[in-house]
Length: 141
Image 1 (cartoon, rainbow, N blue to C red):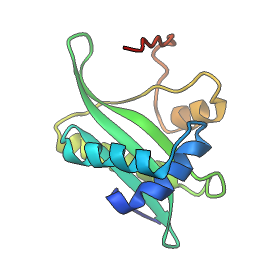
Image 2: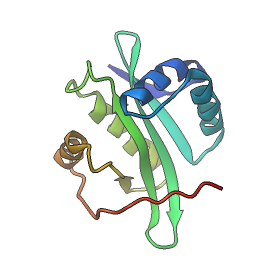
Image 3: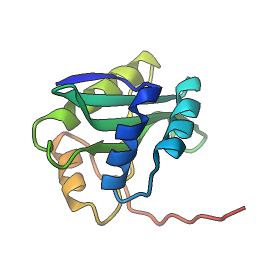
């Protein structure tokens, strides 16, 4: 298993994995988003590799909030369903922790859909503490 920063050529694999999360994704759209993320210092994307195949990713964002201070938020984390349970998720979180510390940030936060009960168990088993539950509202502009 290996973890490295994502590169543009990872877009096809990232799109496939994003669909496993239940979100529609296409290669060109993923490539455009990844290209934008790679240019911004407050974002990071790492990929997990097993047997030369990209089978996981984590996206991070440094947040500076008047209410809650500075932290790094896990925007998304997915491991291919065929490779779950092998420790890759933990390795991706270690990369997230290392990146956070490189920014002098010592708190990770993740928001997790209420229906992802297996993910809840995963995060709690590695030390995350449930802080609150909330609703999310969108407005199309």
